Length: 284
Image (cartoon, rainbow, N blue to C red; front, side, top):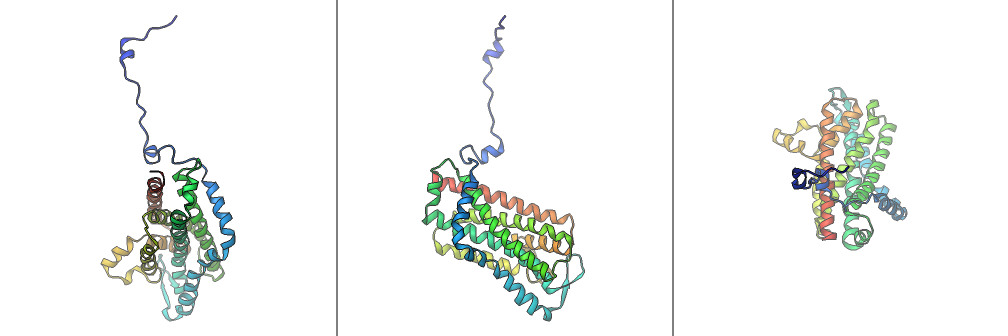
């Protein structure tokens, strides 16, 4: 026996499907789950340029040899994050590890992506397939993270060989370096979508080089005046240097999670902006 609907049921409006926050940020159509295809394409294209890719590893290594080893004897010992005395080479090595992770990610996420976006028109072809802007963002950021991860792994091996690692907590320095690379790659890719010509890359250098020099990479934070300390503590690389230095010296505390959270937020903002900018530039 069938039951007739009541008056209330007949007049009730259909239920509204409210989109969640994630769907509001990344509506359907932006992601097809095929980012790995574009990563595979980058690996195939990079086979003939492996020497140029690996060249970025040597810059922080030369800094370590010239300043940490050659110049370190004139500096003497400094205070590690836990207060213990530490050689100058062991002090700057974690900072250079963070610089290595940043450089590998930023250079790949800016120069290479700009060429693909403006000149090669690669993404116009990619978005003609079922792939979406989020696939492009994830793929290019992943490729940049792979480059930064290779630099970081190589630099960690150098630190281990030179006896600059004094704690087993340094094993976590590699995943921490990958996180640093991810955050810088995401923000670098987002910034690249605003670059108009190759001359704008001067702004990238203007941001990276001073940050590498003044984010406590070579000097303790205490040498700066108080106002400068507050400015330095706002720089992204400062949090990467503090994270690497804490892990490599064994000065591990809950405060390191604050640095991790900084990069998680930074990476999330970068991915969202990069995806929506690619959508606006290529699909609208």
